[in-house]
Image 1 (cartoon, rainbow, N blue to C red):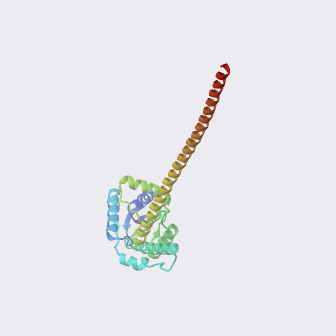
Image 2 (cartoon, rainbow, N blue to C red; image 1 turned 90 degrees about the vertical axis):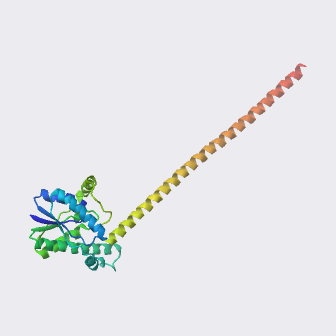
Length: 250
């Protein structure tokens, strides 16, 4: 199948490309991610993807970068919902925007089907991705080629590090950047608290050990003092006995 594969970044493309090529698909990569902010981050991910794809002999199509449209479409979704519901609603709107663009591009350029690398991440909403890909493909009149690539996430991570690929530390949008930063700070705070607790535990253990040693020293000192008193009494008794014996002889 002539397949247009929507890619969110280079590292997430490694295993999907390998698997889809092994299945016999003729692949072209589409980088259509107006969610990524700021602009220099978008450019950096695009550059990393292009460099890797060139080595693989993979053509790359770059979609329009329109963060204002993303903000109007996805950035304002779910504002009245609680945290988790707002997050999922916003991600769905984001998937719908990008996968809709991918499906339309596939139809316009004569591709048979459209797929995405988004499902390689265990941090995404996999079933929502499937729903939005199938919805977009149906509207555009192309085939949706969906696969859950999450089982290959660890291998993709290993390979991308081995290749020295740029690996971003947040999904793409400013919301995810702030959430990721907050999570990293929370993890750091937890590690600091853990280290503090460990230091306190070690200090308590040292203090307890020192108290035990001090107790043993005090016990030994008391025993030595008792023995010294006994020796002194015995010495005095022996002295008196000698004196009394001397008097009796005289």
